[in-house]
Image 1 (cartoon, helix red, strand yellow):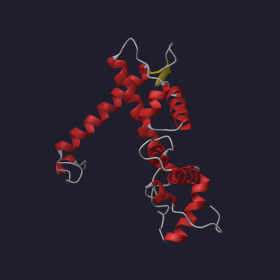
Image 2 (cartoon, one colour):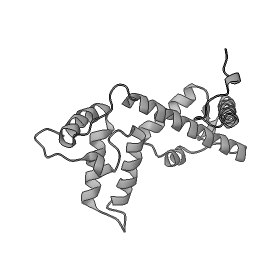
Image 3 (tube, helix red, strand yellow):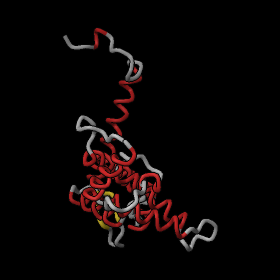
Image 4 (tube, rainbow, N blue to C red):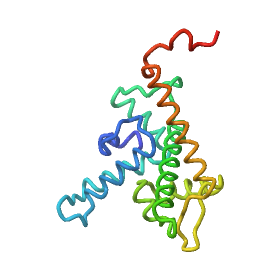
Length: 198
């Protein structure tokens, strides 16, 4: 968006908070694009569909989004978080970590339930995770490189032995943390004096 063009609130078009992460942006885009798509019999709206596509194109690229955010601040007075807050890249990394955990748990459950057909197709994974082709390629690359997932003979993706170990270890850590918080009354309650190391 150039300064000489009329201002459009792309965040309002996509119905997201201006500081949302990339995954939230993508989920909103996919949901609204599907809703307004010209082929959708009940909610087709070409004008809204084009607005959603334009907004997503303007915001999906990090550099373009930063430029738009400056214009957005000028027009709305919205003050984006300072450097003290989590940066966009850090939010993306946290979002990626959540996707990796979700993907591993999905593949773990599949292997437990269908030991003879443990794989999940790429299209099914993409549908469940609600992510773009590029994002899924990144997640698959990362988890394969770590040895946590593998490709089956049928061409699907399955969790590896290392992946199973990772899920179990992560689940144990989470259970221990919940137990610790329960024993001491949750995260807001002060620790007993004898529990604090001298």
